[in-house]
Amino acid sequence: MEQVLYLLARGLVALMQALPLTWVARLGRVGGALAFWADARHRRVALANLTMCFEQQKSTREIRHLAQENFRRIGENYACAIKTAAMNLDSLRSHVQFLMPPSLASLAATPQPPSVVVAIGHFGNFELYARFGQFVTGYQCVTTYRGLRQPLLNGLLQTLRERSGCKFFERRFEAAALKATMNQPGIILGLLADQHSGQGGLRLPFLGHEGGTSAAPAIFALRYRCPLYTGICSRVGLAQWRLEAGEPIPTPENGQARSTTDIMLDINRAFEAAVRRDPANWFWVHNRWKLIKGRNAIGKESITAPGPTQTAAQISAIKGNERATDSAITEH
Image (cartoon, rainbow, N blue to C red):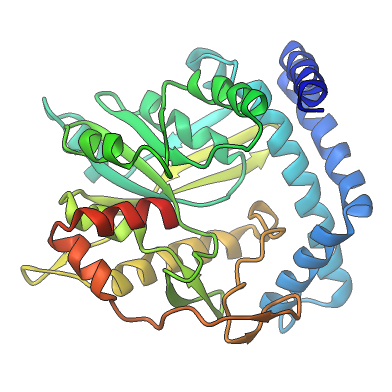
C-alpha cells in the first residue's frame, strides 16, 4: 500500500511542478474548497476554534465563510509548497517579499554573524520559512521535523524540503547534531511554536484562551545566547507571500535572563496580532487549545497543562542541562 501511495504522491508532485505557480494556486484553492465539505472532522475543529475566538465579533455566517476561506488557503498553500520547493531563488523573488528589522540586517552584515532563533507559526505557505537563509546573506537555515511513519513518503517529502538549502533535524533522533550545529555562528534556527505542546509545555493565553505552549524557542535562545525573533508568512495575493521577521523578542532584562513564560507570552502576542490581521491565513484545523482545563474547543475532555511558571527542567535548560534541551527539541 505504501508503494502505491508513494507512486501517487510522486505523480502529483511531478504534475504540480510542471504547471505555472498561479495555476497550482488555483487548483489548490479548489481542492481546499472540496475538502471543506468532505473532511467533516477538520471542518468541525476549524469552526469550533473560530467560534471560540471570534464569536463576540463575528456572526455564525461570517465564521463559516471564514472557515471556508481558510480551507481554500490551506489547499492553496499545500499545493504551492510543492511547486515552490522546486523553484530557485530568482524564480521566487517575483512571488515572495522578504522583510526583516534593522537589527537582523546588522547582524547579517558582520563577518561571523551570531546564530539566531526564530519562532515560526503555521501562517500562509509556511514551507517558505525554509528559504529564510537564502534571503539573509551569511546565514544557514536549520529546523526540526518529525518524520512520517512511511519511509518512502518521508523520503519524498524531505527531498522536496532540502532543495531549499535548509538543514533538517529529526527531533526524536538528532538532538545531539542540532545542539552541535547551534554552537556554530551564522545559524537561523526556526522552531514552530503555535501548536499545542503536550503535557510538557506551559499553559499560556492565546487569542483569549489558555492552551499548551512549547517553550522551545525561549529555551534555545537563552541557552545559546541567541537573539530571538518571530517569523510570519502572510498571503498577499494569489501565489504571493510576504516573509517577515518581526522585531527582536527580549531575552535578558536588567542583566538577568527573562523567564520562559514572559518570552513565550511575547511570542504569543506577536502571533495573535498576525492572526487578527488576517484570520484566514492561520491553521485553524489544528486543535490549538487541546490542553485547556476541563474541555477543549471541540468539547472533548482534556488534561491540564502546566501553569505559566518555569519548570525545573526549563530552568536547568537555561543553565545548560543537556537532557532538558533534548526535551525541548522532542516536545516542541
